[in-house]
Amino acid sequence: MAKHKLLAGLVLGGAAFAAYHALDLEQREALKDTVRDKGNALKDRAVDYAFYAADALDDFKEGLNDRQAAKTDDVSTDETVTDDAPDDDIVLSSDDVAELHKTVEQHASAADDDTDQADSTDSTDSTDSTDSTTSTTDQAE
Image (tube, rainbow, N blue to C red; front, side, top):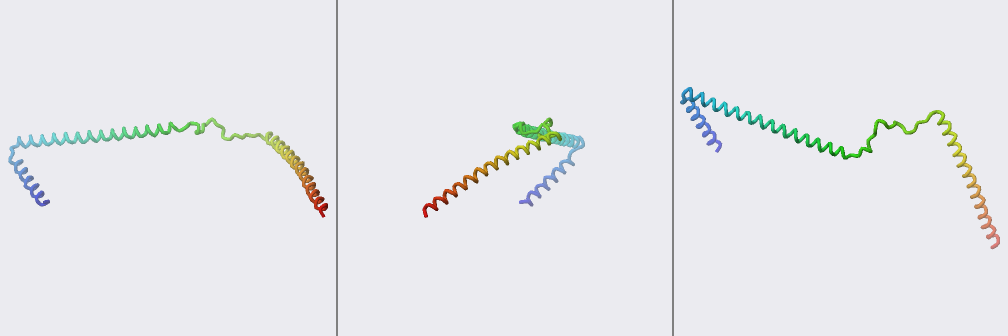
């Protein structure tokens, strides 16, 4: 089958070559002009379609960028950090540190006093309960 196509191509090509040489000069020039015009028209169409494809691609990219921008606009702005915010919430001067140290010591000593009072109350209660247990066992014997 491929041999038949090759043979048909050679026969048609030979016939076209023979027909071209059979034409006079005016007809050859007219044929050349017609082929050039059709070739140029084909080139113009190809260039136009290339520009159409580039425009379509640019429109697609713009649409995609718009969608991405819309998604980022949906994100809450509460999560963003502003430049006006201070870097650190705790700002102390040397005078404040001394006062803070005194306050911490006062709270620590007050907590120790409360713990000592609670321990002394608990120890008397525990000795009383052991004494009562001992006295009841003594009476039972």
